[in-house]
Image (cartoon, rainbow, N blue to C red; front, top):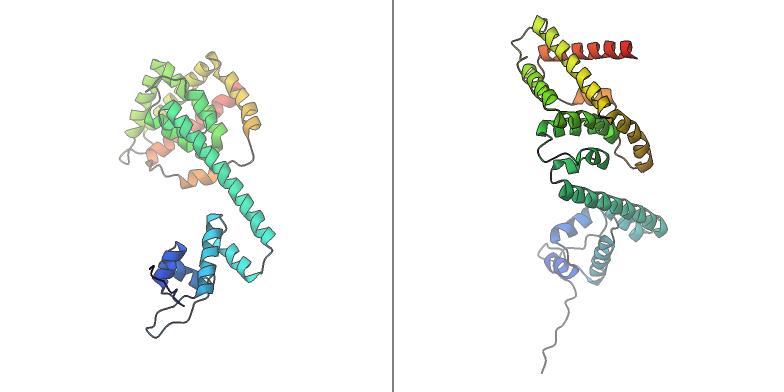
Length: 280
């Protein structure tokens, strides 16, 4: 003879959570936001959940699995909102999530193909640099591209990539870049910003930039840069990350430069501006 089970008229929160496939903590949250009416407490001071409560918990779980937000669930239960509006927003959310998944999948594929953090940058940047041999790009190069992409977007970083292509393929220019980096690092807080060495180093930076520009033109990379504008416009989908202004970004990106190094950067910029104005 099989034993007969008599269903309880009401159950405790732990039993309700177990049956609905959720947790007591979640149920308490539903009470707090008004999604599930809080039942009366029994003689022992604990809540007891009846059949109607369990039905609502089951519907909550089903709607949650469908991706419906808690706010929309509450509106649907209260019949304060047309269900078509809820479903319309849900479709928009799912479409955005699907687009995010596609972008993430593409990023993983680029990482596997490139085999370095370069694959995390935008395809426009990765495509320009992925042909370089392993180790040709230094961590500092990738850091510079990462910052540029954040400030100026994928197009700005893709154009900057020309510099790193030249540095990777011209040992002499790479050696000069390393020397200048070491000289920059030596401009610490003990150096007077008006020390003559600051102006001299700025002049050397300007000369190095000129040499890089000439090498870029000789390699035909300037022509490739012009084509980037057409490629970027064709691939732009209108869903790119919103970029802050360059001025705002510069004020938020910490570098910790000493006054001497900051002045060297400013002087280099002035010299390059004069060079461009006289060259054009």
